[in-house]
Structure formats: structure tokens, C-alpha cells
View 1: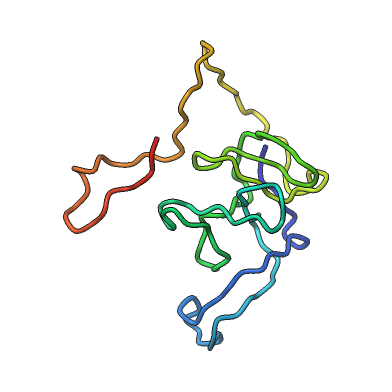
View 2 (view 1 turned 180 degrees about the vertical axis):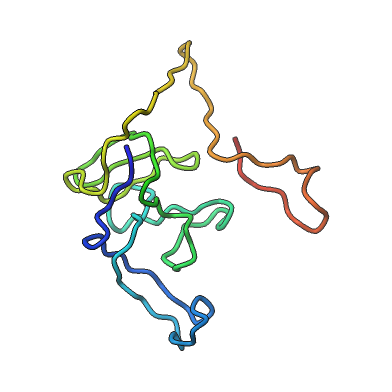
Length: 150
């Protein structure tokens, strides 16, 4: 399925800090609710579950609602495999994890057209990798290698 929240009715609250807004219009940290092109991704099928924490941004920690934290969001136009549904929540396979987003009556998605689903030939589970990472030896001196596990 494809993420397709209606922009004007898809209101999300994000946290904006002074360092996020170079105009100077944000003198202190504040929550702002606006129409948006994304859905928040949570670790379980309820509204208060922690946000998914992209391990590249938050090693071992949940995500947050900072405007510059894209790790716990799925953007309009992205396509995913649905792995479950529970009430108004839909589960997708995202960055190596099952995550959940609010999708009452499918209003934040549309079917993905022209997509070919490839199934494994055998019965053994297949490891799926969402991103490619260089080997630790390829990382320049002074930078840490990715801690993502296959």
C-alpha cells in the first residue's frame, strides 16, 4: 500500500525548537499542529505507544515529535507491505521492524498499483534489509559505524 494522507485533514503535532527555525520566529520550544504529508509510526497499535526510533538517529531509544526527526514517520508516496491491522491501526514492515500508524477506514493509504510481490522459494524466513550500510572498515576515522543489525 501507498501512504496517502489527505494533506488538509491530516493534522500532526510536531515540536519546533529555536534551532529548527532560522527565521527567529520560534524563541522557545513549542508544539505546532499543522496539516502534513506524513503519518507517525508507533511501536504498538495504540495512540500512546512510543514512536518508532530510527536506529541511525536514536540508537536504542524511541523517536520523538521534533520537526527534524523523520525516523518515526512515513511520508506520502512511500510504499510498504501491510503486516497487520488492529482497530484503526495498520502495521507495516519499516526499517526492519513492524510499526503501526493511525489509518481509520484506510483513509491514510491507497492500494499500491503495479507492484510485484516476490515470495521466497522455500519455507525458511528471508532476511530483509531496508538500507545498505558500509562495512565498519570503510567508515572514515573519527566516525562511528552503523549499529544496525541485519
